[in-house]
Length: 215
Image 1 (cartoon, rainbow, N blue to C red):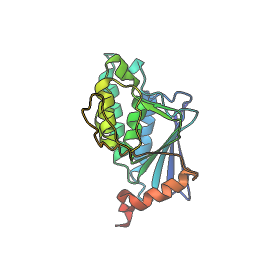
Image 2: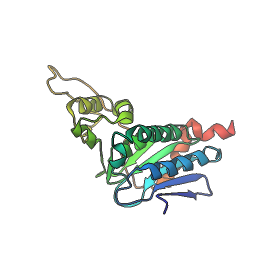
Image 3: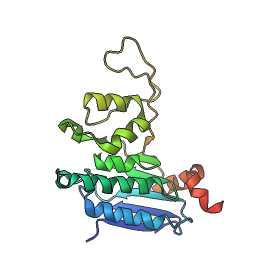
Image 4: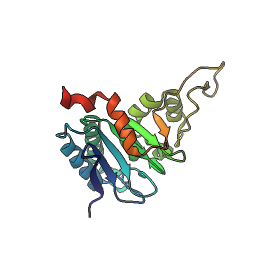
């Protein structure tokens, strides 16, 4: 039984890649391998306008497999995830993550590798492993680059769930002697009253990867 699914829509111009093992959609070795195979096959599709990464069920992903993060398995597990993230970032078209429910740990790292994140208003994004003193390797690099000061605060103070202030407001880290105008430019938006396909059509207009086949 496969744990992923690929659907081509809009005359084959938009690829929808599904995590299809609800409700947890755990990123175990099987799912990561299948996702890697799908994205490898899409590398040859220069006719794509966008790739939408989404999930079946109420949650995007609970994260990586805990069993595969034991000492004897952690090294190959991290290598598999790292290879997948590099594959996503090298996709020939913009990759849009459509997030609902919980998106945790390795699931968040997968989302952070995408070009655009569209999340429901009640979606929960976080790295709960920080409570165990374990740093998420990819998120440690990708998350601060995505959201700026609040992510650095969350990493330093061991916050498992990230709460992002309004980007137009000032944000003051604890103990700040004076107000600091740290603006969080968060590329995560609530779902607008448009179908995901419209987001895909919009993204192809602004992402250079979508036009490589026309050069």
